[in-house]
Picture 1 (tube, one colour):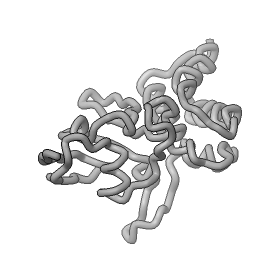
Picture 2 (cartoon, rainbow, N blue to C red):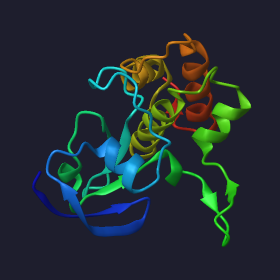
Picture 3 (tube, helix red, strand yellow):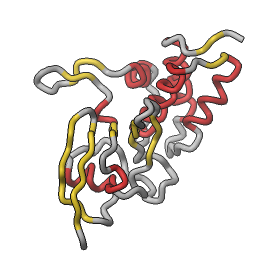
Picture 4 (cartoon, rainbow, N blue to C red):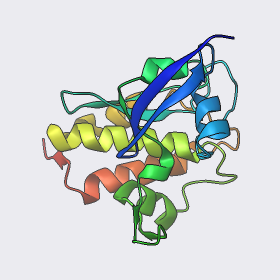
Length: 179
């Protein structure tokens, strides 16, 4: 298989250039070459969203990207965040503080087996970042959460807790306005 160079910014750090096969999926690059196994391979068809990472766009917005169906080379030159990149770490690399979404998920025990949790954390993080740029009316919150999380699949049926934790972090951060 043909290979070519790939460079990206991953969790704030420059990575590459790496010699990567043309047909390598991003999930395989993360797991097998970069030892970042937080994103999960679920369905392998882009349906369950357990594999999502966050793609940071040049305009300051972000979006989820499914890594099981997206080739690694799509990410060449781009900025990507994985679940491993959310928490703050000390000089020794030990987690010193979770981000607000992660902390609220822990506080509300918003998971069961946790297999799908990284995808939900990434989705909720993208939503929080969107609402930080443009808060919404409280009357629109449930639909925004559904739009953000509704395409994720949880085989343990933990949806209620994921939605509740997301609602709680959005409200705690003051990202909804009355009306």
